[in-house]
Length: 290
Image (spheres, rainbow, N blue to C red):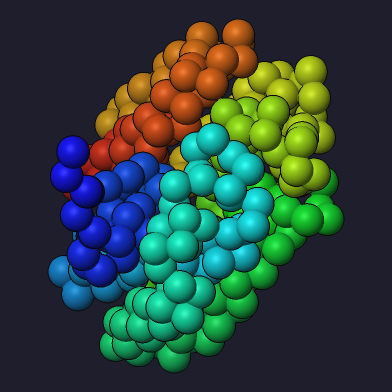
């Protein structure tokens, strides 16, 4: 039997940044684009649209590098992650660090083409992205910290458009905090058995038997806060139709996670970005038809 040919560096780097698993950046881009449309009171222009889509993908990819460096000794004990490039020794920590730095710098270069206020808000965004992986050692619900890191795109979007971060931005930021808590707890339920063995902290472990109830509460809070934030813009039936479709998906998620199977919880997480799509489409059509 012939030996398996070694993988190219490009293939390994794409695996490292989860290029073939877009769910991770899709859950980020839709709330960010909703914020961009609300801040601009409609279409924000192609420049900002391109900056925020590319910036979201690049920063999520950089975050994957940081996360896998921090978790390399834990990942070898988890079924789903033991074959990751750093954990398996195919990519060095130095290589991953350099890749993460390059991706973050390119993302920063994109933000530099907008307002200085957006650049200023990008600094804490990067810091929270770096710190997040380490919170899993001591913080009972690191998913909340992840929500802070993920949600900076909303704040930066408002800063880039209007040069400030109003109450509406913080309402959307808080709404998406609960969305992150919901879908990342679903994700944590997949690895709960492994995480308990290695002493990792997750919201799925902290919530215990109230995990499903907690996720549904997080979804409800996200839905309600999003409605409160955007209702004053009077976007009419398109927005509320999008919200109704998002609510229906939240109910569907309950059917996927109620039995706490690995397969059901992973499907729920991997499809969670469709709630963001529904709200985004409703928002865009609402502004277009207003």
